[in-house]
Image (tube, rainbow, N blue to C red; front, top):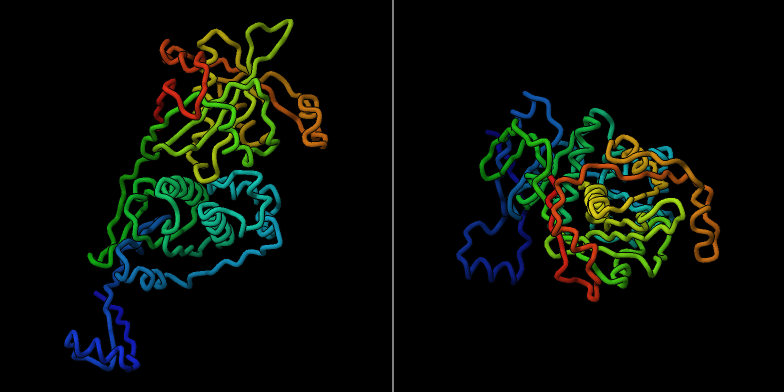
Length: 384
């Protein structure tokens, strides 16, 4: 087995002399460490994702450099984030950012240095992966070390989907093992074991996510409003719902009645937001559909409109939604903060999906009059 030996000369002074004398250090001229390197197995099979894992000081970064140079990304702080992806067409840039789980439109328009740690990390991942040529291996050091652990899981799942879809190669060095079942690597390497471990039997989906949905007060919108791509305004008559994962707020949904002389007992989706750190897991669409089922089960007609191209396409392909026509978004909102809405096409859908799995007691959340941020009226669902 090949060993990488790192040697450094010691510059002696009173501090090093104190260490020599106190701890009986014999070699006062240099320090050295040997790291086992054995990546031969990686050349015997096709792979997309490899992970070098271990504690601090085990040589992960040194091993990572055996695959190439670790690129440092420098964003232009004067430009909007999306403008840094100028080697792509605008539509390609939005698709790339969305694929890595950074699908918040307001975030795209902010400079890199104003983003959260989780948003910056995803932006760097998108940049490196988007720039990589077909034969190039993308190298990521200290993967997820600076982000919340639930954010790390969300990020890992979005990353592996994109890497496999476009048949890229990426090697990540990390001291965390909790990301493995979300990242689903083709191989892992521990410097302590000194060998590549191949993982042939991968699940095709992420682990189950347990979410709680609460009726909440209007003021809860303040947590989410800056991440909504159309407007921070919300009708005071809206029924509001907050979604949490491990007691962290991750999503917000609001619904409004639709007064009509022809359609009785109808409601429409008004706002739907998933915080940027938790995008890419499918939370937004899955929770929205669950709430649409609740309203429909409660003998209401549930309509939803969207101008988001990806969401529109997803609903056009979903048999649970009936296409109901196209309107101009400016016909609905008038003015927002003194600005006229653009005449973007808004696609309307009616939810027609099966609601037999919804239990009657689950409908209590629709009837509850929320008077606190979080209340006893809540439902729990699992996404898989």
